[in-house]
Amino acid sequence: MKVLDDAGELVGGLSAWTWGGLLGIQMLWVREGDRGAGWGSRLLLAAEEEARRRGCDRACVSSFTFQAPAFYQGHGYVETGRTLGIPGGAEDVHMYKKLAQERPGRRGPFRTPAADAAHSARRRGPGAVP
Image (cartoon, rainbow, N blue to C red; front, side):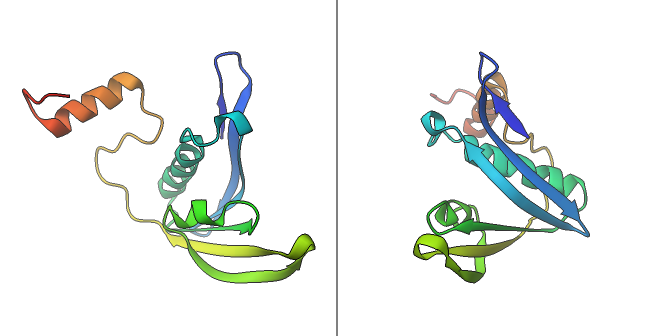
């Protein structure tokens, strides 16, 4: 999966595999200037959604301690172990997540602004102030 900006330049991407009901995330990357804008979360959620569509019920990923273990843990991944001895005193943190079943009617992480506005309006109810 990838995200491109209006100029066609790469903003971020995610590579993964599925096998036997398991999603394995190999790499998630977001361009430095676009970090913190939610692209990593959108890519991760899109990968999990596609994995569910393929029949997966669990996911795994590893991240070096100097990278993003907290990012994955913030998305429900739990640590299952560590590989020690990574150069520079780092460790490779292995994580796992049980994928919840998708809720009916969910549109996914890449909704258009119009779809987001309509979704927000439905959640607030008629006559609500935005």
